[in-house]
Image (cartoon, rainbow, N blue to C red):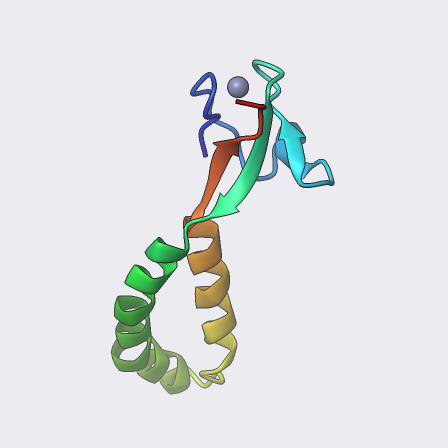
Length: 92
Ligand SMILES: [Zn+2]
């Protein structure tokens, strides 16, 4: 994820983002940022991910002897992570 102010790359587990609270401070430019979710992207991705999961991964996982339902949670987490983006939280 990139800081909307200075384009500095911020890791999801970096110090600036792991702070609690809705508003985070960029470690590079000290400006306020917040995490927001791109719901449009989730809706866009959810169908191909679901299809990929049902026809490709689930049979594979079951073939390997695991339960097919556990992997759904991983997909859900991945989708949420993918759709996360940083927005400015500075007053306009
Ligand atoms: Zn910054």
